Length: 530
Ligand SMILES: Nc1ncnc2c1ncn2[C@@H]1O[C@H](COP(=O)(O)OP(=O)(O)OP(=O)(O)O)[C@@H](O)[C@H]1O
Ligand SMILES: [Mg+2]
Image (tube, rainbow, N blue to C red):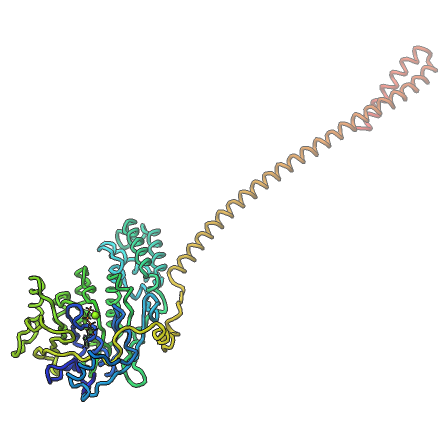
């Protein structure tokens, strides 16, 4: 609830306790044991930021925040609180808020996607649970893709790229250092795991343009972006990496803004311990750095967690606006953590911080904020405001109509599959295969042609020989015929000549003359037929 453009968080007896919008980018903490009121506090703050015209993002881990698009309803609990805090006099009313629902799994909101390139190698490795060596190779894969102008949009692209680097590992090892098949194999396997957990949905286009979140409705209320995380939270690494990506995305997108009257945007990170659990030192220092620098870009980050000890010191020291609900301190460890939490507040002489912290009721909290000068205020024991919007989840029909009626529905609802590394490398492999096939086909054809030619030559040679044989046979036949004609003619002629000579020369002469005549005629006719 806004009061004189200040965010009313709660009341310490009659004293109003505010967060100052100009200090709201100095980040914050909402902590407390389960059931103590963290989610309601988050809701109350989100409503006030929206009233102030500041867009808000939060992850709805249990589904109990989706009701913000509806006006709140009176209940005994709420009306008692309104009355006891004198909120009617301050203009408390039930309100609805402009909400955009998002869901990585595309079930309870607009699909929220990003590209592999935008996620970057470090976060990609984190989401896939890669070790240091594999992370190094992942960085190389990104570099090679970048050098060769290959877009990494979805998991298909990354898979093709891993395969491509594997096929050319020798060349890239020479250029960049050792790329082992074992590491590439491990990255491939991790990618299969990521796809099975929904990563294939999360990576794709249209990718979220985070500037679409910097919007207000017609009445000037900041839009509240609600990411449904009931399913996503089952995969803590993906959930955590996703939140980190958003933070770095904002960091890269926004220019330096200096001191602003109110933040450009406020983020609430519920189950914040998941961001830091098992995070390698390099990532922790990156988070610390981003948290430190992002405030000058006008972004406030509020960590919501059960125990403040879940937040690393380097981050905790940067949280200016703190709402601490009750903490349990049954075990020595819990007592130590609660004492440390209490010790981080500026003492209020009216009560003991530690003892009070342990005895807080539901919807009560210790609150310390940065005052107008940026100095932490003395800690106050507050009753937190009740929310003005509906407490709890909305029904599916309302959610559906809100999703489909949203101004961003057309932009984000349809999946796009642009030409990227996968398509390019598939085409390239196909071309290489085709060229290889063409080469093989050409070789086979040349072989076939050579064989045909040889066959042809053989046939021609055989035909030639047959022709020659035929001609020779013909010649021989002609010769024989000529001989026989000559013989017969010569015989007849000889005989006739002989007869004539015989007639002339008597019996002796007849015989001699016949033989001579035949031999003579054979010689003459033989020469004629040669
Ligand atoms: N400020 C408040 N005004 C009215 N009711 C409140 C307030 N804070 C808490 N409550 C009541 O307490 C219940 C539990 O609060 P809430 O869900 O915020 O706890 P939580 O700390 O988020 O628990 P968990 O760790 O399990 O998520 C609410 O459903 C609501 O009924
Ligand atoms: Mg909660």
